[in-house]
Image (cartoon, rainbow, N blue to C red; front, top):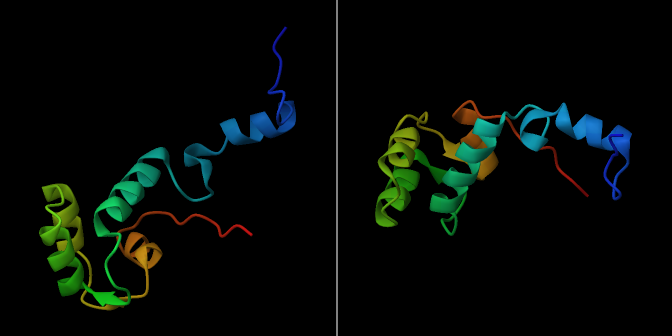
Length: 97
């Protein structure tokens, strides 16, 4: 007999299994890319434009994939990492709280 999680129940467990990446609009790959982006760009001042984000990524010796992603951004100011992720075509996590 298959049982659901003692914490959540079978219905919620099923909903979570059917929602890739754990957040609406985000695949597991998007979640990983966004997490990696945030890891390397955290601590930078926002709002920031593309050149500031490139400088930040290079200053912290981010992997080339991250630097290239930042270089591909449009030349606009970003208020936060969420806006950067959206500009890169990543999904966004819904706000909680």
